[in-house]
Image (cartoon, rainbow, N blue to C red; front, side):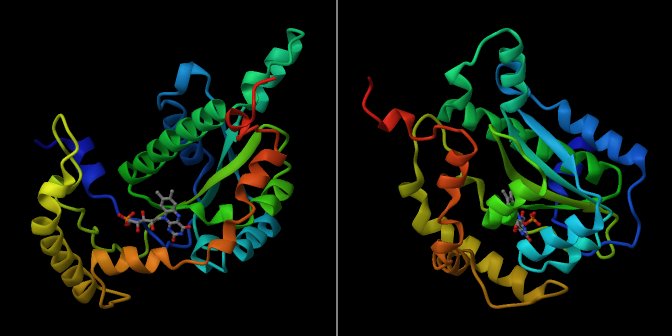
Length: 257
Ligand SMILES: Cc1cc2nc3c(=O)[nH]c(=O)nc-3n(C[C@H](O)[C@H](O)[C@H](O)COP(=O)(O)O)c2cc1C
C-alpha cells in the first residue's frame, strides 16, 4: 500500500551534502512543531531541542564529532537533549524534590521521547524536500557538549541532527529482508538466518559496488564485523557522564536501604 507518508518514509536516506542554503525561521519552526507532536511517555515531554546557530559553537561541535565538514555546511543543526530538568522545576515549585526523575526508567523515557521526536523531525524535513543526518557522534564528547550548550542537571545530549536542502541524492540503502526482522508470535531468527542472510549480504555488496559515490566492497555481515572492532574507549565515560548529570542510572543495582 502506498500513500504520500509511506513514500516519504520508504524514500529515506541520510543526506550529508547540502546546498548552501540556511533554513528560514518558519522552516525551523515547522520542524520543531512536527518533532513535538510525536508521542511522549506519560505525556511528560521529557526532552528539549537546541538549535545551534552560533558559528563558534557549530565549529566546536564539528571538531568534537570528528571533523565532519558537511555538518557545518548544513542548513540547520539541532541537538536533541534528554530533559527531566523541566519537570524537576515543576516539582520544586510545588515544594517537592522527587527522586523518581533521576531513575534509569526516567532516563530511558527521555531517550524514547527524544528519539521519536528526532524521527518526526527528520521525516517532516524530508516531506518538505530537505534531507538530514542524525548524529550520535556527539556522544563521543558528551562532557564537552554539556558544557558548550550549558546543559543543567537532569539533562543529557543524545543526538545531533544536521538538516538542509540536498546537494546530491544518494540511493536508499536496502533494508534487510523482513524475515530477518519481523516474526510472528515467537522469535524465529534461527530458522531463517542461514538461508536469508547470504541473500542480503549479496544485495548490500551490490549496493556498495554500484552506488554513485564512496563505492567499496562490503556486505552487511562484514559491515557488522567492522562495527564490532570500533574503539570502545571512545565512549568509555558515557555512563559516568550520564550519572554526573544527576541520573542515578545504576540505582537498581545498589542494595535497598
Ligand atoms: C542513533 C543514530 C546515530 C547516528 N549517528 C551518525 C553519526 O554520528 N554520523 C553519521 O554520519 N551518521 C549517523 N547516523 C546515520 C546512519 O549512519 C544511517 O542512518 C545509516 O547508515 C542508514 O543509512 P540511511 O539513513 O541513509 O538509510 C546515525 C543514525 C542513528 C539512527
